[in-house]
Length: 337
Image (tube, rainbow, N blue to C red; front, side, top):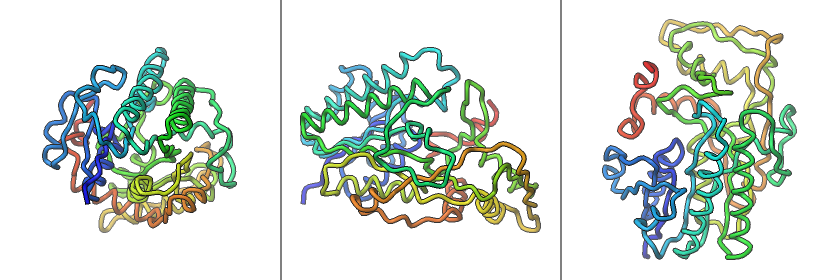
C-alpha cells in the first residue's frame, strides 16, 4: 500500500517535533515545516525532509509538495507563553489567523483529506474552578488578561477551520490542549511579560536536590494534564478516524495536586535524600479544572494509558536521553540566559 503524505507545520516546536517523529515511525511520509531557517540537521538525521516556511507569507508555500497530501497537521504560530510583550496584537493576527488561513488554502489546493489543529485551553477558562468535567463542545469565550488577543486569534482560526470543513469538505480535528506533559530543555515561560520558571520544573529541580516541596492551596484539587504518549496517540487516531471530526478535549481525567507532588519526590529524589512535603492551604495556587474526554474516547477511540507517575518517569528518561538536543539545545543554554 502506498504511504500517505502528511505535512507537519510547526515541526520545530515543543509538540510539532515529537509529532513528526511519531508519524514517521508509523510509516507516513512526513514533511516537516518550521519557521526556523536551520534545523541543524535534526530532521535529515530522522530521514524527514525539512522546509523553512513563514506561514504568514503565501509565497513560502510554493516550495512545499503541491499535490497528493493526505493530512495537514498545523501546530505553527506564536505562543504568548514565550513572548515578552503582547503590545502588538498584529503578531497574533498575522501568525495565528492569516497563517492558519494560508495553511488551510495549502490543504485545499493539495487535496488534503483532513486537517489537525490545536485550540487554546483558555477558551473555556471561564469554566475553571470546579471538578465538573468541561465538555468538548462548550461555548468558546475570550478570557481577560495576557492571553486575550491570543484566544481571540485562535477562536477566529477555529472558525476558519470550520468554514473549510463546511464549504470544502476538509475533515477537521480541533484539539483543545490541556498541558501536554513532556521534557523540554527550556524551563521558562513568560506570564504578563515576566519571565518565570515553570512551576513543576522548579519542584523537580528541588526534588533532585532533596529539598522540601511546598503544596499551596487545596492539596485535593484536580489538575488536568495529558502525557506526551497519550497526546501522540490522539494525533495518530485523528489520521485514521472514520468521522468528520470536531472539537476534542485532550486530557487524562486529571490528577490530584498533592499526589502529584509526592510522585515528583519519589521519582526525582536522589538516593539517601527524601523531600518533605509541606502543606500551605492558606496560600494561593492554580485553579483546578478537568476536561471531559468522553467525545475523544467515543469518536477517536482514545484510551488514556499513562498515570501521573508515568509522565514523570518518561520526563526523567527524556531529560537523560536529550533526543531533541540538536533541535532545541540543552538546559544550560536557557539557564544561563
